[in-house]
Image 1 (tube, rainbow, N blue to C red):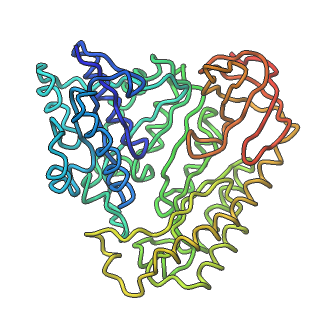
Image 2: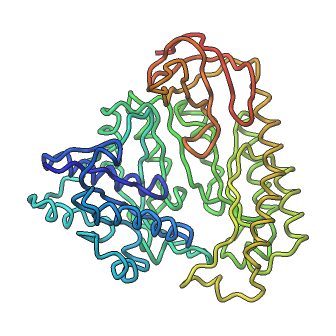
Length: 430
């Protein structure tokens, strides 16, 4: 019997594939380990979105290859996005790898395990968590000039609503209480198979699943969001008024070169319209600094935009020139050090806004979904309020009550430490 540890790198969309590999391992009669030290086989599901991801993979592969050489592990398998980007170089450098499995090629992995090939594509959570990701489409048709995703994962391919419903039910049976919809562009879901944007129909269907308390939609491209969808947030109470719009910038000339449509004024108007209709709405975004042609004045404009728009959270990334993208051929490339310095300027602006917005919750009672209990300190309990997406946003530390993972509890917020809300357990809500 083989014991596998799955090293799942990259985004939640990649985690969905990792959980399918986990199901295949378990179904084959092999075991899953929660720690690499307890495994004799390692499966790495890779990310290759930017150069930093490839550097991280190189470090990880070097470590496991050393363990393989020392016979501390018996098997090493690699799959994921790297198979469609720089695979030849990694294969040349790491002969210690026993199998290189093409992206999402679950049948080849089954053959590696000497199992019959099956079309059954269930998922098995890698950890005990209160939430589950539902990848509603894969790939992307947007062709943003800086992005490698279409070349790695191809054009957008939506999953039919009945299939997604069945998958969501299956993950609910594993204990998930929050369902998080992910894709490269969730707003365009369904265009390829239904001839229209079918996100509303999907949300209505998923809202029927009784186990879920919250439904969160991520990766909503601002160019493709429809204002008529606001009615969904009034009609379906599980749908959280949490809007993640990855706007990337606010300056029109930068956005145009990125391949985006809406400029900063149009994005601001969209957010204002949503706020007017849903006063409690919160917004998260991602931003890129140092894109070719960006000036110091553009960075000042971006900081002003962040201050005026008041995103609750923002991820800011220094532009990474990627081979094969249109942006790498643009003139006026910015030095990496300058792009990084600009990133921290914008992050500094955003952190003050996040702190100010979070302070408004002090003294209030909030429903919190329990995510984590420290095994060596059961009094240390972490959860999330409805405005916190897993891993990327802040958390709520809960004192007292001894709640369990997956429970929804009421917490009175008493303090803000950094970007962590601290509160006192009041009661269990289920």
